[in-house]
Amino acid sequence: MADDVPEVVQPFTLGPTWKRGPDGRFLLPQYTLGWHALAWTATYLQHHVGAPWRYTPEQARLTLWWYAMDPATNRFLWRDGVIQRLKGWGKDPLIATWSAYEFVGPCRFGGVADEGNEWGVPPGQPLGVQHPAAWVQIAAVSQDQTRNTMTLFPSILTKRAIEEYRIDLGKEIIYADKGRARIEAVTSSPRALEGGRPTAVNMGETHHWLESNQGHEMAAVIERNATKSADGQSRTLANTNAYEPGEDSVAERSREAFEAAESGRAADTGLFYDSLEAPAEARLTEAWIEPTLKAVRGDSTWLDIERLKASILDVRNPPSRSRRFWFNQIVAAEDAFLAPYEWQACPHEGIELQPGDELVLFFDGSKSDDATGLVGCRMSDGHLVTFGVWQRPANWPDGTPWRVPREQVDGVVDQVFADYRPIAFFADPGAGQDDADGERYWDGYIDAWAQRYGKRLKLKAVPSGNGRHAVMWDMRDRRRQQTFTEAVDRFYRDVLERQLTHDGHKVLRQHIANARRRTNAWGYTIGKEHRESARKVDLAVCAIGARMLRRMVMNSTVWAKRSSVRGKGRVVVLR
Image 1 (cartoon, rainbow, N blue to C red):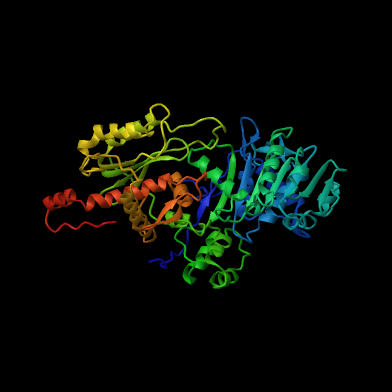
Image 2 (cartoon, helix red, strand yellow; image 1 turned 45 degrees about the horizontal axis):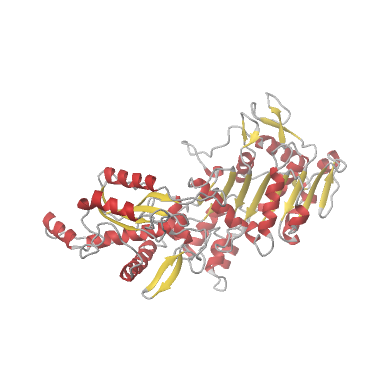
C-alpha cells in the first residue's frame, strides 16, 4: 500500500558525500585540502560572537569532498559543482564560509602536512596557503539573492580574522590585505563581468537563472572567466533548490549535463553534484510527510518539521511546489507523461536477465537527429532491459555531421539473439533517408534481421498479405498508431500501479522524464516537448513498444496453443 510507511525513509542521494564503505560508514576522500579548511573555519569564523564555527557532519563531508585533490598533481578533483537541497537547508551559510575561506584562507595547495603541524591536519594531507590575489564573486540574477550571502560575512568573521587579515567590511564589496583580496556581489550584467579573472565564484539559486533574465549568458561568462584563471584552479559552485522541468534554467542544464556524463553520453568534465531528495515512493500524505522530511533535511535539524508539514498539507499550495521546495524532488512539467520519481518507484534493482531467457524486442530507428534504441521485455515477468541507445554525443562539434553507427547496432542485435531467445522483434525504421540510394536509413538492416532471425520469431510484425515481414513495424501506419496509443495508456497505468520492473538504465530514465503527452484521434501518445527539442524520448518509445509486444504475444494464438500444451489450468497474467 502507498501509505505503508517504513520506520526510516531512505532518501535518494547523488554525490560522493553519501557513499558508504562495506562497514556502513561514510567514505571520505583519500587526499583533500578540506581538513585544513575545517581547521581554518573553526579558528577564524564564528556562529555568533564567541562560538567557533562548527559544521554539521553533512557539511563537513561536503567540505572534504569539495576540496578533494589529486595527489599526483595537487590539483582539485572537481572543476565546478552543484549543491541541491530543500529550501531552508542552510545553503547560504555554507557558501558564505567557503567564500570566506577562498577570500583570505589557505585555499591553495602549499605543501603536505607532517606530524604535529599547527593546524592538526592529518599527516600526508595537503596544507594550504593563501591566494596572493583572491577575487571571490557571489553571483545571482538579482541583488536580493546576493544579499542573502553578503549580509552573513559581518557576523561569521571573527574579530581575529578582521584584524589579522585587515578586512574592510562593505555591503557589496569586502576588501582584505589593503585591497589585494576581495569578495564582491555581482548580478545580471554579463557584459560587465566579461574579462574578469575571479579565483572562485558562487552562483546562488540557479533554478532562477533563465534565458529571460540573462541567466544563461551570465553562467557562460562566469565559466569562461574561471577557465582562464592564472593557476587553472578557479572554480564555480552553484546552489539550487529542485528546479522546475521545462523552464530551461541553468540548474536544469547542470543536472542534465551531470546525468549525461553519468550515463556515458558525454565526457566527465569534473562536475561535482550533490543532492539529497525524497525517494520516488514518498507520498504527500500525513503518514509520509514527517519521516520523509527528516530524511531529506539531512543534518539541518533546525528546520521545523511541523511547520513544513502544515505547509505541505495546505490545499492552497500545489503538490508540485511542495515536492520541489520541501521534498527536493524534480517534479515533471504539467504535460509530462511520467514524473521521474514515479518511474524510479518501480522496482529496478537486483533484477537481471539470465542467459537463454525468452523475450521480445522493440527497436526505434533514427538517422541522426533523434536517438536510436533497442529495448527488450522478458516474457516471464515483463521486466524491461535496455540493450542499446545511440544518439549524438552532447560534446559533438556543431556543424559536423553525425549518424547512428548502423554496424554497431547490428552487432548488438546479433549479440542479443546469441545470448537470449527473442520470440518477437518489431522495428520501426523511422523516416530518415539515406543519401546513397534513397531508401530509409534502416530498411536494409531491418530486412536483413528478418531474413536472419525470421524463422525464430513466433509473432511476425506483418503476418500475411503482400506486405508480409517478420520485423518491419512502421509506426506511420494509422492502425499501428492506434495500437501504440493504447499501449501508452497501459504502460502509464502499469507504472503508477508498480506492475512494471526495469533495469534502472539512466538514459531510459531521462527519456521517460523527457516524454510529453500528445493527444491524437485515439487518446494520447508521447512525443518530444517540441519538434526541434534536444531532449530525446526514443528509448521511452522502445520501452512502451516492448511491453506492448509482450502483451501481443501473450494474446496470440501461438502463445495460447503453447500454454495449453504445457498444462490445463495455466493462468497467464497480462502485465
